[in-house]
Amino acid sequence: PHSMTATTPPPRILPSLGAKIPSLSDRLTSLLNRLQPSPEVLVIFSALIIGGGAGLAIVLFQNLISLVQTLAFVQVLSYLLKWGTWTLATIPALGGLLIGILRWSFPTLLGQDLAALLSNTRVQLFSPLRPFVKMLAAAVSLGTGASLGPEGPSVEIGSSVGVLLGQTFQVSRERYRLLLGAGAAAGFAAGFNAPIAGVFFAIEVILGTRFATPAASLILLSAVISALIAQTHILHLAV
Figure 1 (tube, helix red, strand yellow):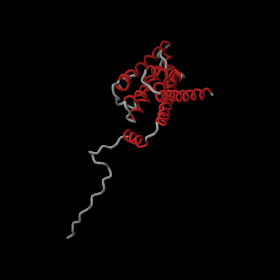
Figure 2: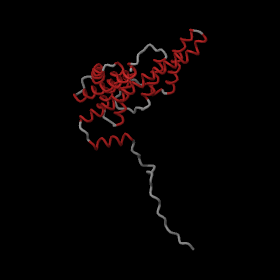
Figure 3: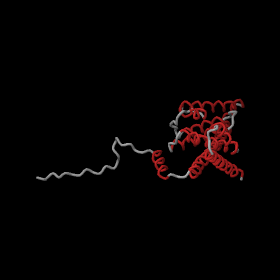
Figure 4: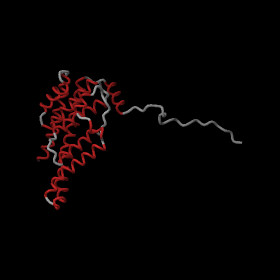
């Protein structure tokens, strides 16, 4: 008879079901705590991410508005005009219908604005999809004839970039508000092409009297970087 030999169980590759897998946010926060960068390095790093992210997001937002305008008033309207010039009035109605569908599909992502973020007493979870859904909704609204400008949504898009950075690195409530202000300044600077005005907007409206020199430096750098990216895109289109 064959002898029964005990076999060694294979090594466990995956963690047990009860083990908690560290999230990307936990890993990045742990890495930042180990590196212990200086305040100056943190300011430059944060400004590059917030200003660069907000500037690129505003460029994408402006291109999306142009795309929606082309689709609505060139492609769709060319078919509707066969029924008469009165069909021009249906374009804003179609845009409003699309906005309603987006709001019904994403009620939580479209319901919170900048004022709600500022009034939060604690840092809340913030979906990375929120700025993109807000961007799409604003582009559809503006591209189909809404009598508004892209500046207001630009501030919200920029503030979303700052909030996402603060959420990723699990910062305190004070730093969360500072990153939100830097993002709002970056969005303001790119949307209005006014970085200095964006800095004053963030300091007066968001931070108030609770800011120090590093905070002002972060807000100023974020606004300048965002405005440079937006202006570089405009100059590229002009050429």
